[in-house]
Image (tube, rainbow, N blue to C red; front, side, top):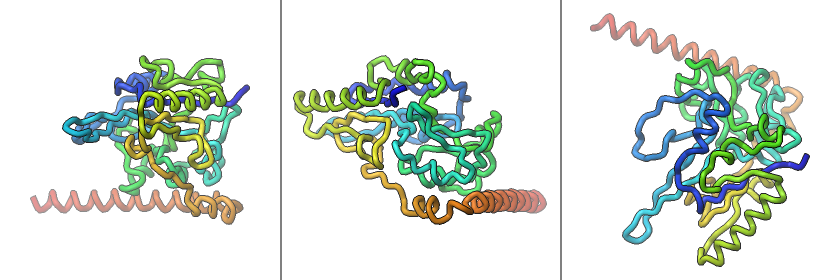
Length: 284
């Protein structure tokens, strides 16, 4: 089978979020409780139970405000940074080029989160609450029974391995998201960029073709990536390579130690909160 790719032409996106709904429905993902944060974007970030979303960006255009909508999900990198750092080999690439996670094997250590240059994987479970910066997640993910593990888009492997397109592409009403053989999608993206140039756009470009060695998601952008909330120059950290090369023989033990340390911190944090609550009640 030929490797697959997703093309996202943001010039056609109307921000309807049909892709979000389709992703939730097909993967039987629970809803997440969110709060208004000052933007129509909802949810405001990816979550263990939200694997794709539409990012909303507002930019002034003279006396007007222009909306930029952009699909946000896993890039399914050609050489995924998350894969080599996984201490239990829970992350793998399929024959169709999707990058997937075996949640039964995953120990929720969070190394894939720190390694990903696109900030995609999310951790569900108690360990998600330990670090308020990198692993903060809503408690709803725990309450609905999601395993303590890393979660993200699977490229709808169960669909594409049976000759179907991804759920997001199937549901998109404007043709913003399309799916197919990698070479065909790349050619379509290049053709679309040429069309936008002919239409008078100053800076149309393909995003995902060369970033971090190439991905299997090609964005057709009307302007620079940061206009749409995408990292302009995603980089795989040297720490990721060091972890893979120098610490490969012992990384399982190191990650387990890290996970145990996180759990101890979590337990201590909860005990401290309980003690403070008890002291407050005694004073009252």
